[in-house]
Image 1 (cartoon, one colour):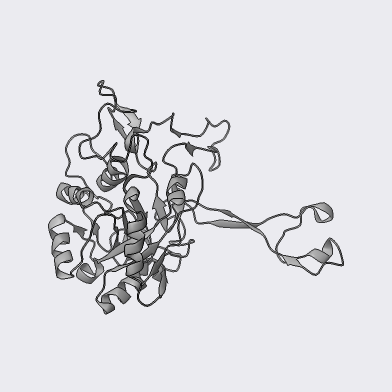
Image 2 (image 1 turned 180 degrees about the horizontal axis):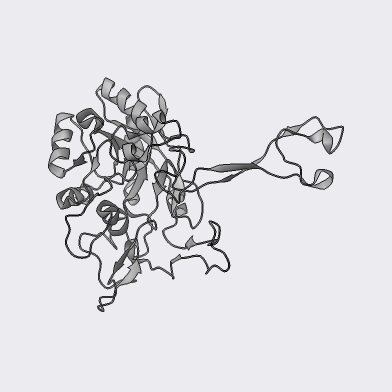
Length: 349
């Protein structure tokens, strides 16, 4: 066992001492069948923003939009770009034309999954009075989640190559597959563009009003309307507006956090930046998590978070149809060692 003491309110060990999937263990054949049972029309919705959105770096100065390059040819056309490249340049008998490109992409710039190695904590897992850097289920920094080798020379964006989550990497989620029943909670219907932190009591009232039922193993989506604002800014985001618009969960509400884990939901997803509202101040005293919902979900309970998804069209359709459930298919990239991943989810109704 990697730990002698687990955090209060955590489920470490619930799925086995070496588990790397967390709450996604609850999504299996039964949840897939439940999701398929929600498909009546065969209509699909893409739940991804274009991956070059929000645009620029105003919202996160160290996460940059994707850059793409043409790959290079070799042989007699050494150094030529392989984009609209006529193969007749290599052999006049060929009629093919090839295009091939390279993408440089920050894995958590746009529509994304947060992996379980994305957020850890300093915590005394050895119960010896000294805190260690640990992640979900007690996996350790330096041993299981390894920073890149030390850099030399001038520090650039590419100085720290090949950090690696040997445990809790996003490939575990890809290998398991992400397909099952999802539930939409329409916060925008109740708060519009108000930058409101939704408490447990308020959320329970919304679920009751909208007749939304969340069961064990469901993936839960919170539509706030921020996706529409992002798209309307056409890759020129105004941080002051986006960071002060639309609702999100109140991560400081302990009753809400307990409900999340006790309900047995497999994942939390939103069209906003962090599912929880980014706290402008903290009511906590003493040492505490900067992002309490991330701390509770990723670190303590292995609940994956989906951020910056596009939910507007699906939410409106579900609202019109008087429904809240649908089949969700949302595998991340099978990129070994990564702590997050772009995703192009599909909802089927």
